[in-house]
Amino acid sequence: MNFRKNRAEELELNLTPLIDVVFLLLIFFMVSTTFQKESEITVQLPKASKEPPVNVPVDKLEVIINATGKFFVNDQEVLKSDANSLQAALYKISGGKRDLPLTIRADAKTPHQAFVMAMDAAAQLGMLRISVATSFSK
Image 1 (cartoon, rainbow, N blue to C red):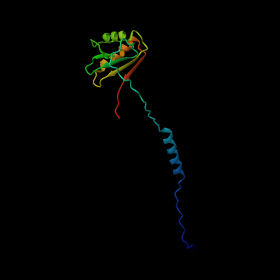
Image 2 (image 1 turned 180 degrees about the vertical axis):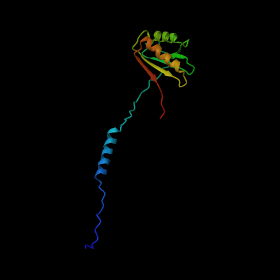
Image 3 (image 1 turned 45 degrees about the vertical axis):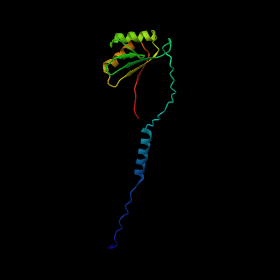
Image 4 (image 1 turned 30 degrees about the vertical axis):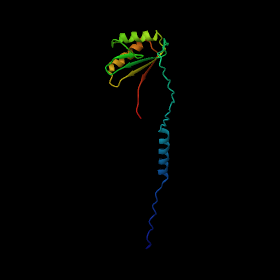
């Protein structure tokens, strides 16, 4: 007869699989994280002169659409707010040049149709460099 008490085996927690999982998660998060580098551009704005320019050749076009859907091409109001009038104004000011940069600025409350009409008029003239101006707040 054996009257000795059986010693209970010491239970120990094996941490090796846990460490492996932590390292795999660390590698996963390092690979899947995107780092976004925001850049800043320093811009020196030109100074305005008091005299109006005399026959300065146009080097860019700007279409501005106000909240009511009226068009302005390089600060000159287009008489009618339809595609043909806008297209004629763009053609007249650009002199038929298709490679001039065109910027479309629209009010936040501009009807969507007016914006699409401006894009369509520029596309029908074959404008190659079209951009849309936006503003953002920090």
